[in-house]
Length: 259
Image (cartoon, rainbow, N blue to C red):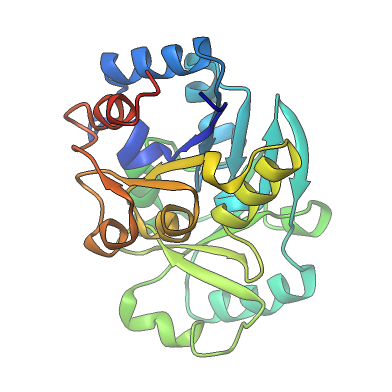
């Protein structure tokens, strides 16, 4: 069997709705690694937010911030930071409209405002984390791989009608948006990291459920959509497995004869 490189989204994929890891998922990851495959996560979280899971599953490879940074055997091998002038322009619009921001580097995150509103609190709770510390000018002295901005679908015209062509906006929560480099994605970094390490496209497998997984699911060698995935993600998947709560990862890997 050819050695595979297998990527897993975290929220809604590796984790159940209760933010736990199924015993079947633990067993599957362990067996993949014992069978000689490279296992990685590909997540919208940064490395700090993913660290507990990285450590718990002993995962040496991780693509974080929706592809803006990639690590192989715990070494950063790829980074695609946001442009600082563009960040300044976006901050002006956000401040003028009372929209809160969270800054992210590959390994840190800070909130812009000293105030905390409900959108930020509920958004961070959704991914199982506390609201980060306040540091207004953090972006000036650090390379940001991603921004989190909080606004409703009705307010998207303030940002997404061509004002920021250098950014890509991906909704991950009711009021939460990821702001990413327009020229980057989970798939772009997956493909670059995997091929740089000698893997052919047909030997790249990815599991996911959300819109930020759409491109990787549709373009890797085998894209696996969880049973709880959005319908548009299922439409581009090679395999649709069971849900994140019902052994979906284990069942798909069994079907692929990888464990």
